[in-house]
Image 1 (cartoon, rainbow, N blue to C red):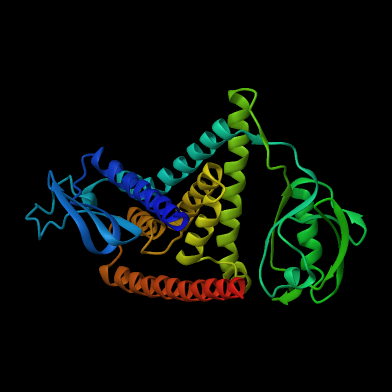
Image 2: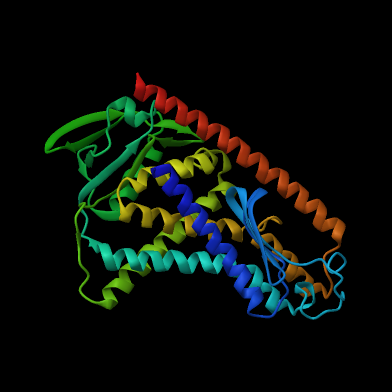
Length: 359
């Protein structure tokens, strides 16, 4: 059921993204001939007012299609064809999906704050959310739920600054033992771990966050709701952008942390176990990721189409078809290849974890 919930959330987020493109075109009077959720063969298909709506076999994607004047017997100079509209109108259509996901994510965060409340101020230390099998943290005995209070007898402080301090110390202690004082259910213990060296930086294979209480408190007024939602939205957006930036500046290290469809569904299933709050957080996080991902300047994504359109605006004429095809094909193989690798890696890791749990 939790896996089904996460897939449903993903499908809804994709639907919202494509609806952004769809409405931006329709409201400007631009011809649209298809709206599809998913790829592959159609499972459900319905034509209404010259637009074919379909739900396809593989729901992790979607598209809005525009008519081909030759196939649909439309005058190539018809002003309602997307290609004949001013650059600014085409930019609006291309960008609408990204803005739809960002608006949805912000709305979800506001809804979450309004209904669930906001966390109490962080307490001293860092909370361990999860550890990866056979990594430095799990080998040393660190467990989910532990609170890291000190590193090398030095108190870590509170909040995001505490997390940054610990991460910096770990990265600078590659293959060197470091001592941590932890609080495990009220019992204080000392453990020693040795961060593994990955591209010159130490890593321990643990998911960390500020030490926040599980309980929440109701907001005092509307302005507190907006302030907290703004901070959460900005933080998630910046961290997501930094993650994708790492693919360029430090690919080898960042790629190991990259998640494919299988891992994303698994994370969604885990968060959905926390109830409404977990589902809303998952939806907001993935919606922001979809927005940032589609902004990348790859031809198969919105960002790539935007680049072609802006170049056309500067040149006064479209980019040659052969150039577009060559760049698009290379982008296609890159994305498909990366997706296949991530699916294989995440599936194999999931099977290994399940095998260990069953032993």
